[in-house]
Image 1 (cartoon, one colour):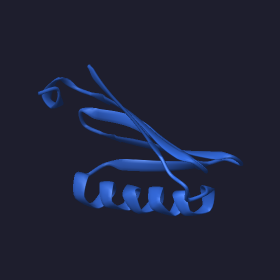
Image 2 (cartoon, helix red, strand yellow; image 1 turned 120 degrees about the horizontal axis):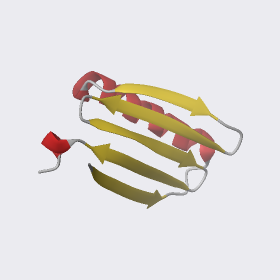
Image 3 (spheres, rainbow, N blue to C red; image 1 turned 90 degrees about the vertical axis):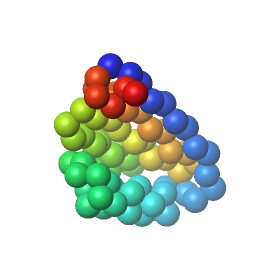
Amino acid sequence: MSDINVRKEHCLGLAKARKVAMKWAEHAEEKLDMECTMLEGETSDTLEFKRSGVTGQMIVTADHFEITAKLGFLFKA
């Protein structure tokens, strides 16, 4: 499997970053046929996502987003 790792700094704070992540999850579910689950924490959230050939998570904090994903064979190219 291939890995994707992306980290993006921001100045939103946790509450606004959480809203952005939820909007992304809604889009991923509707347009990309992903199954998304948000696990809220005190200082960070974890948004888990998956579909056939892709699994990953987005860590949401007060100052950055960090996405890691594993791609299956068909998505490698």
